[in-house]
Length: 209
Image 1 (cartoon, rainbow, N blue to C red):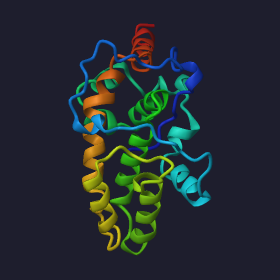
Image 2: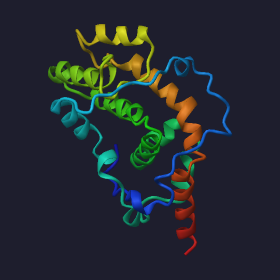
Image 3: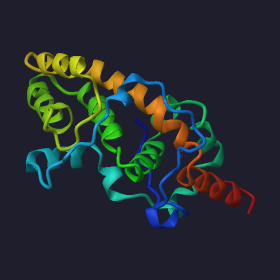
């Protein structure tokens, strides 16, 4: 969903990493997609091809982060910039990982995983578009997808048609819907979460030493 690879901080080194953020103080999101979100029963296992694809697309979300080494390259100023917009947060590889872990704590990590998969898909060579489009569709868009994203029926059907003759923009409509959902729903809570605030405070404290 770039710059040279960054050493990622370990989850157990970020205070409060395992605490879920509370949305009590936030207004109920107005995005219409949230109204029709229903509890989905996800299968316990899914195809090895999908698992392998997700692992290759988002290794930094699965491998964790190493805070001790990242202090030399990740500054408090950089982390503060993440609060300016979701776009700036997602433009930073470490930001993607931290936000991904926050979404995981809210059981909605499929949103950033899908967004990152779409970013990778746009760079795919033409001869590989068909197979990769099918993998993304089965993993996130299909009605029985293990990590089904929360998009409306029209967008789901439209995407299904587009991948029959895939182009680099086949998932753009669905990706935009998920970006807006994260921007209006998860992102404001992320900025108030322990995951973000404790990382920022830790970096600020270390910058004073």
